[in-house]
Image 1 (cartoon, helix red, strand yellow):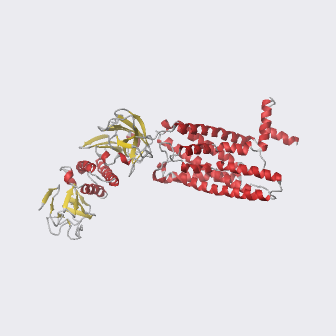
Image 2 (cartoon, helix red, strand yellow):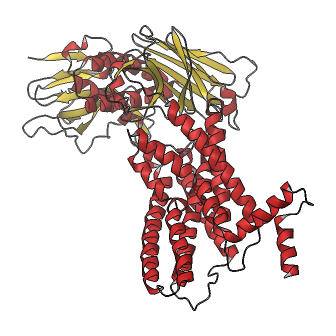
Image 3 (cartoon, helix red, strand yellow):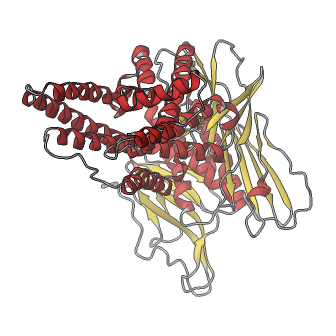
Length: 639
């Protein structure tokens, strides 16, 4: 039995032994599915010219796992030398070995697709992507393909498949739409705004040219969504720019809400809007300001749910880079720092909410830590120290901690207005990255200096001396952090500026921070254990020297307290997931590094306490105010 399908350029004959065969001549082009089920093209495949004729109907076939993928249509050459040849109006067909049947793209928009397998449909859709690599699709052909793609979208949304297949099919559909819509973007001298509406898809293409005269740019909107963007900001030296906006009618059934992963597994999620896509053309500029999208609700809003503005990231819906501006009864306004594919998802059950207790603990702890960091810096600045005491690491550790915690506190306090400005948010996250890395480098330097000091303690006759100069320590402390941040910016410039104005987690970029931190914590832990072993050995050797033993015991106490100063409690961060008590302990200990620095190196230092006492007596007994340095100078003069 033979079935004849009508194509734009020729008739395709489907028989029991041949899927596609050229009927014009025996030596023509064909796709064969006989015996070994292989796709073949004769050696003279592109030679379709004879004498004065420079066009013919040809087939271009490629082997697939289930049969053939073929491009069929009118093939034109500018001359009879087989140069500058290309398809004029190619059709795309998928053929199956098992059923000896073909389906072609031109038919998808004109027939009932319930009898066409989803695999057939996706094979044809995939060919749109392939053909675009070697063939510039004209706008009129793109419109015909889009009609077929619209029907294919509805067919795929109805198919029952596992979650991974849906993600793959969704990505293929999005890529095919992107290829075809880009063919609709044509240069203009003034302003062009085109509308394309199909059964389940609406497409808008806005373009401007160098002779733009109007100050009012039309709003880019469909029946279910709207995008607020001023594309004049993206016009290059040619003063041209264009943007496309697509609202899919059935894509929410392909890229389902189940692809939105949250930490709480006991929640239900549902799509609250149509899926939309936005793409910018003729511009290499990045978004300096976020773009607002207004998404109409496709279901009744439930006040018990928690809405999320999300974008599609290959295999899942993610929140990074998007934030919810305002939700109304019928629509929601989302703000995103990039153009991609977006949707609104509602989560029900136990939506993640900010913990008030953690927020209060964090606020109080950070403020207390900042106060003691300031006191420690004032002490280091105005007190006189013995020549052998090296406070360079402690001073710079205090400075880095103070700047990091202060910037972090201000950022979280004003997060809502800041996060809508991508550049500002990215700069802040980069600065936080630098300051916190500097903190850890200075913790490492302090650990090394402490180890050297304890090592000298075991050799009573030797003098303690500064092994490294202050300038060299400062270079190490800041240059390492600067290099790490610089390399991170160079490799992944879009890695900064999450919705919390911190490092994004896409592509494992968070390891640009966690990697160095884990390395330093491991080294500091080893150094700390070595110090304990050395001190234990020293105590055993100094039984006869009571005074020296007393000093050593004080050193042991200070060394144990150094556990916090060296950042060891940061290890608790790996155990805070779903453990509120551990998270509170983590916040308190790591925000109080300045407090421990002040206690260990200032309050418990006898000479510093004496200078504090003189200063306090002068203040309370109304003596002539003197600085601590002046008091110390007077004492030395009298002595």
